[in-house]
View 1: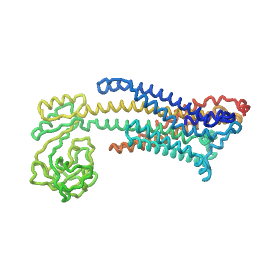
View 2 (view 1 turned 45 degrees about the vertical axis):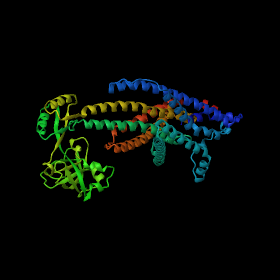
View 3 (view 1 turned 135 degrees about the vertical axis):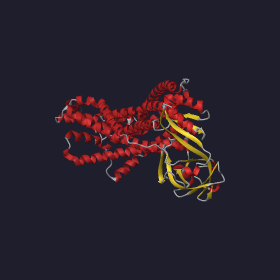
View 4 (view 1 turned 180 degrees about the vertical axis):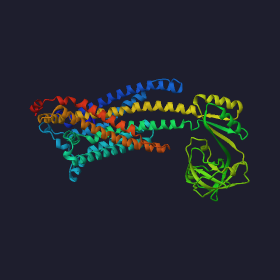
Amino acid sequence: MAMRTHLLQRLDSIAIMKSLGAQTGGILRIYLLQTLLLGLLGGVVGVVLGVGVQATLPLLLTRLLGITPEWHIGGGAIAAGLLTGVLTTVLFTLPPLLDIRSVRPLLILRRGVDEYGAPTSLAGWLGRLRRSGAQIAAGALILLGVALIATTLSESKQVGGIFTLGLLGVLLALLFTAWLLLRTLRALLRRAGLRLPPVARHGLANLYRPGNPSAALLAALGLGVMQIASIFFLSHALVQELDVSTQPSLPNVFLIDISPAEIDGVRALLKAQSAVRGTPEMLPVIASRVLQVDGTPAADLKLQNFPKRMLQSISLSWTDDLPPGEKVLQGHFWTRGEQQPQVAIGQRMAERLHVRVGSHIVFAAAGDPDHPIDAAVSAIVKSDGQHAASRAEFLLPRAALEHLPTVWYGGVHVDPARVGELQRALYAKFPTVTVINVAQALETLRGVLLQVSLVVQFLAGFSIFSGLVILASAIAGTRYRRVREVVTLKTLGATRARIGAVFSIEFATLGAVAGLVGLLFANLTTRVVLHKLDLVYHLERANNAFGLLAVAGLTVATGWLASYRLLGQKPLEVLREE
């Protein structure tokens, strides 16, 4: 986009050079050299910024991990950055550079603004497609180059291919969505007709002026918005998940290997500790193995992503009520005092064993292998993974397992700053009980996540910055048409305030549509990723609204920085040039 707008401003120069006898190949080499120099300069700036980030990251690592990593500048990384910058610049400027071939000397006498209009017939589209053979080849070369760069930097052909296809898919989707929104906006504008104020009607119509690359601009800005918004939404969702995991209702310290003789004493000690919040969760666990599923021996079962040897070492637990953190997906959970053997099985384990509600599973407990337990599946449950009950793979009524040898596990929420007190108290009375301090790990993880997300958002901010630069250059590229528009409006009696309002509506609409497109795809991306992580997606209405307003405001400000001088043009000066 930047090179295309740069060449649009140089059309007169190119036409004059051709009229004086310059060959197309020579002009192409001139602008290709400019492109190489721009790519090299951009690569040098990127290397300097990268070295600056590399010098800053050790400070964060020192705070988080307590270590000071050795700082050095990698020559290989600098060379890779420079080469990537130059190669990317050359690849993506091939299509506009090839447009130089179609510039005719007649442009210095008559500007062919009609050439920028879209074809209106099938024959016109086919003709444009035939004339665009070099452009299509350049597009294929761009994809090949991007795949090569991604493969080289990631050292994986699979990652390079996925990145390239993903980039192509996102760009096509953004372009189509932007085109669709513009068409919808145009249809609404036609229907509204004279009911809209003239300033609003004129500002919206400016999106369709000849040569205005609105769809491409929307895709470029939308891609930057999508990237930074996706990173923000994902990091925010993960931090929220950590905040939920540290609530007083969830255990952050787990106790392992509590014997039946110690369980009452451990309960009393936890109750006496002032650092403990809420009610401790205690889970009895019985070692067992699976003998049969629906009459099929364990050795003959066809399991899904689960080795058969794991069936020889499973955990059973008994409970009278549905444990905290468990949710019944199918069937029903038994009532307190149930005497018949029943089993509630986790969703993933049910998928691995191919069982459903009504299936029968035969267990052999380690303490009584001569008396197998034939239990019918009464419920399929799903655990949130944050409570002690998630340790057990199969839940049965108390009467079915109470007589078997049991090892107890516990979960309790403790003030993170006072976990040491609980550890010392437990070690003094129950030295064989193992304490796992998840609270400290969660606090460290939150700190790391916040720092990393801050760095990534800082780097992703360059996408928004580059998008605004592209917007400014694109607006500057239409300077000639905007000057004529300003002069014509002034000649007809329009004031500066009225012309400013027209431009403001155009820029605000452009930013709002770009923000809408980018945020739409950012929310879709966030939802897909969170689903893969087994996390719940929540639409953040306030953040989306703020992002939309911020993008629209930045677009208006950038547009005015690139075109505010146009309002000072005097009609007589421009008309004399005509």
